[in-house]
Image (tube, rainbow, N blue to C red; front, side, top):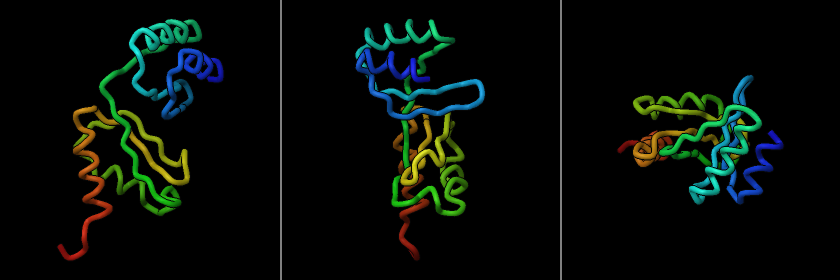
Length: 123
């Protein structure tokens, strides 16, 4: 993973989020110049299979110690259950919980999270 981050840094591609599993490393990057991203992808493929998925947005719920709130992840996923979630990052940061959705669903996800967590009681 260190080598992959080095390649992205060399091409001045900002890393926004890293998700890992037993067999996969998902690196969410900022939109960068197509040529730089393409060159970095070629170098990453020398390390292992690398694919680029476009059209995704990261949505985060941010708050002091939000990850320590019991049931927070269930509430997040329940509030966006009608959307296609590509990846989740729960517990990676004490102050935020994030997930990936299709770019065209990002605003809807934000509205639904807002409704779940910031709705006014009694209205």
